[in-house]
Length: 206
Length: 253
Image (cartoon, rainbow over all chains, first blue to last red; front, side):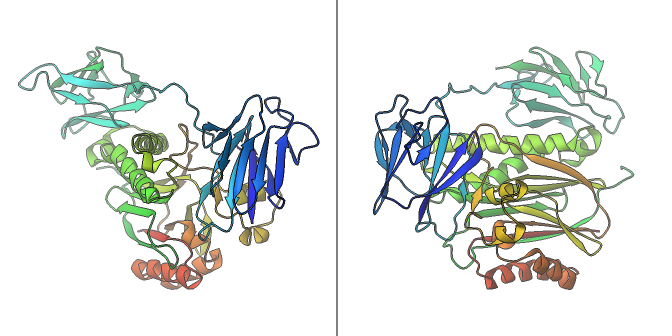
């Protein structure tokens, strides 16, 4: 048996068994599946259920998307996600389900939003033999310093923080801009100077 | 040296293809030294499932490697719940990034359950329908909530627990890593008691055998972790073995 699992904003609202050849979807009450959704046309789309199952756009105003791509008519495969207005239809083909392989429902369709450029930052050693050497801060947590004294920089979203430390073996905390680190996380700004285990480093955004 | 030292841990894990699948999309990893134990159950065609589960485990391990080094773990005043949350979020970013740059991996995803033992506490985190159980003083309790359609229907009163066992929707999950830019991660903290046993498993175990069978197996063979783990995997296979089966047992000394 094949069926559709209909979700709206991540919540499952209905499960519909595809038991007849043509199932229409739209805002008008005459449809087989009626959606109360202003972005859906009167008769918006149809699911054609024969040997295979197809979805077809019925010349709707806003169109339909299959797995995030606009389409007019396509054959459906198990696990496909069809977007109609603000509703999502997950196509489940029980015949194909190889022993209940896991399917994610209510996953928001990946819109073609503008790519988020990850913010990048690094620390550069400012003094001594290794001056100029830089270390990228590309993980959630980066450790600075050596066994005698360490500091940790945490990346959270687009910001970086120096984590509070109790002090290493010498019981002395690393310094930020000349001041010992206290019990609070400190937001790092471009050009901040960190002193840890006798090394001085400069924090900078790339 | 800190006064309340991390509980000493004894850990053993196994992962098995099961009887029906021709490859294993589960990935497991543990370290008794750092107290980090991770299990991921991947999904997605063309072997992308195992890419996702392995990437999840490696990303979390990678993210935590430096904060879990003994010098930092003891010197840094961090909220480990936040640290674990950040690590799982990082894994989600890494899987999304990998899928974007490898078209054959589009649509891959994975569940994750993990524990981080620190001092006398354990942080547990979960996304998806893999599970963590705690066996304490002769009582077995599931400490994570399944992020599945069936669980949602139980929570909303549409279905009883009994009906859920036979539901054809058992394989539909509502949360996973790698399917969206944002991920909602469950993170909780628990105090560890001596002789606690934590069990991490994929649904290949919990869908095949009941909590009662898990319980009686732990009662019988918990003194020998290896044997208990093997027994659980074998039981899942005897009861069908429809999916990959992974089990990790953590005994707190």
